[in-house]
Length: 338
Image (tube, one colour):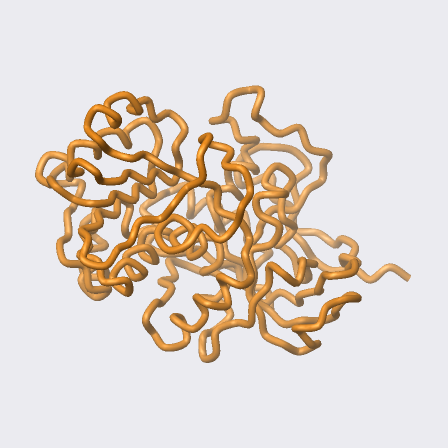
């Protein structure tokens, strides 16, 4: 008899209304994998990009998956079963993970569900004392900030450039973080402060109190003034928004500085950057259980905390996507499962 579970699936691309909460078969784990009983799921931009068919990408990059598919990559939960060759987990362990990203970026990571299978190498024990909801909000955003600013942690080819991304030492440097109130941004702020950087946070006014709580040295409300008009001589810009407008931050950097756009598509300022002596580099975040294990210590001792914008039951995933579409997200949106 096939065991079933509830999951949120797509049968076609479209708006939030195409997300269907339905019964599906529970995943079967392979050697080297674990089965996670999901307690919470973190939402990420790739979720709504895929739901919408990645319409912002060039046609040749757009996905043509076999429907139905299940979205999601970020989970926190409990190990329900372990496959052969798994030695570092036991049934009952509380864990968190970013599952199979970016390997399944065009097909969904299958995390919007009551159970998900995952390679054990991508899983880490949940930070002690941290609830499943903020833990589920951590993986992709935290790993993105970590791999851009602290340690890349893999040798995979870079899909966006011919050279390997290399983080820059942060101690004593001035770092500007654009989109500092968002999922990646608010965690990047905390990692940069942990590493001894002076941090300039660019976000909307509603994030000002949070940014000061997180210890930023300077806050800029982008709705009142453009950061590139008033900031000069910073060492590093992490632009969590990216896109065509990221080139405006070149003028904020000193010669020898670095511009890291999280979303690099549309950037056309490479020649200008070269003339200014500025390094522009990006990368694709990748699942990494060992990095999550290292970051868990920071979450456990309060050095880093995950801000949760809002929560929705798994069955209300469409409402969660509607919340994401309204923008101005402070921290993370999370689905609750158990």
